[in-house]
Image (tube, rainbow, N blue to C red):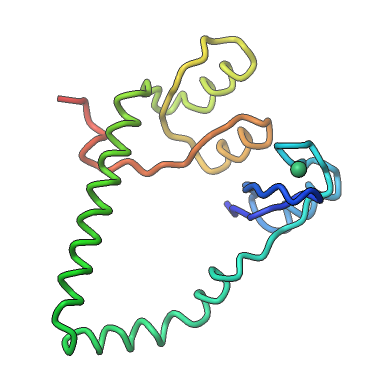
Length: 158
Ligand SMILES: [Zn+2]
C-alpha cells in the first residue's frame, strides 16, 4: 500500500491510497483519480521534499547522534519525556476511538460497504481489513482511516 500526496490543478491537496505507484499512474490514465474537493481529474503526485531528503540521509546521521548522546546528559531524558508524552497522547486517541466506535472485527469491510450503500445504519465502526480490502474500499470512495490500536485496548473494555 502506497499513500501518495496528491494535488489537483486547483492546488487542493489530498492523500491517495494505491497498491503501488504504477497503480496510481494506471488509475490516473483511466480518469479514476479525482480531487475529493472539486472532482478535478487532473491530479498530480506531489513530491514530499522533507520525507524524500530524510530517507537517504538518515542512516549516517542517526549513527552520529547516537555516538553524541552520552556527551549531552539532558538529551536521553528529554527523549524519554517526548516518547512518554507521545504514548500518552496516542493512548488517549485510541481510547477515544474505542469508546466511540463499534467493534465489527473482520466484518469491517462488509459493514463499511453496507453503510456506504445505505444497507445499514451509519455509525462509527472499527475492525480489521487486509490491505487489499482497504484498497477496495478507498477505490469505492468509502472513507477508512488506518489506525494501529495498542494491544492493551484490543481486549474487552473493563
Ligand atoms: Zn480540487
